[in-house]
Image (cartoon, rainbow over all chains, first blue to last red; front, side):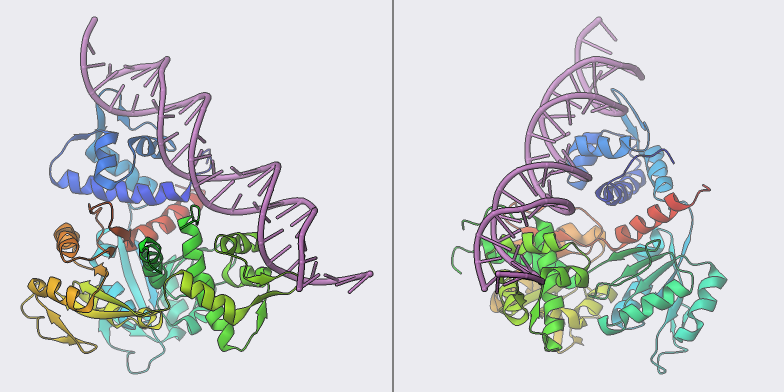
Length: 212
Length: 212
DNA sequence: TAGATTGTTAATCGATTAACAATC
DNA sequence: TAGATTGTTAATCGATTAACAATC
């Protein structure tokens, strides 16, 4: 790959652009300028052009971008032109909600296995997917060739689960447990810390108040 | 406020530090160095010291930081030394899961109102909080003096809900709908885009493969 | 005192923005 | 052709890292 070094922020924006373009495509809009994309997603037009320039030339000078073509390019760049099997560990409230979350399926993610330690949950189904004991994690992961695992167990169990996922052959982890996890260098990991997001808000609210 | 300009990344890390310090405090660890904090949360020790330096001098040279004191300082900086009433709009799976999420309550966030348009849901309770129609949003928001609203409705409804939250007097919004929302400049908004996080993973997985 | 670790400055690195030539 | 908008370079801005004097 001759692609230089792509900022992670660029990737997250590409994901946002593609969603926006899908929306426009549904409205049968054919052409769009970087400036219109920028306004639609809340960034600058230079940013849009810069982000796209990492991957090639997708527009026509004087005209703009073809909505459908650009969408397809970005989808391909992100690797979303295929279905991604995902295993979910933790069938609590969050795991259940995420397993059923339409936003994942829409974008090509399919939960192929849900795992929990609670014997009462095992055997129940979420969206036609059976909740299984952790002992079957490796078997199911390999059977479906899943490369992505999602952790929604309590923080105290998260490291152990991460280890199991790695052992099972998972390549990338999305971690919702509020805990820093240690994984081998070749495993991708991203943390979604729900409380942290609220705390950035409270910080800003606290700062804004002249009192305190 | 004479505080210069604090990077948002610093705030998110402070939140992570505070959680880690709470953990250490529970284990009765009294003192810790910037290097140990760094290892515990996965950043550099210079980063830890720099982040803290924005707000004062909390350590002792040659010794380190007092775990409990530093925790209390950070909690205060983030504005978490009080309870924050929160209103939740959208009582679907995600809204329900988040309303019950222990991680929010642990950090001082309390859901004081849950709202939905579905007449079948109205009157039901989630954790003792009744699901109410949107018409009561302003009333409940003002009654509890809630400054924070969480949006978990579908993308198509999110802008309308954001407008209602702003009208109701909300100052900060945590948006889980995959949509860019327009709000007045004085309203804080943060987007948590669940699919985007998975897509950063698929991009990296796709890049790593020599094939494709 | 000797050893350790902070607080802070300066250097580096990386990402965003502005500007404009290229070109449809 | 004239007008519009891309692709790209250079300038700016901001955040991270390295290094070390201060000091417990």
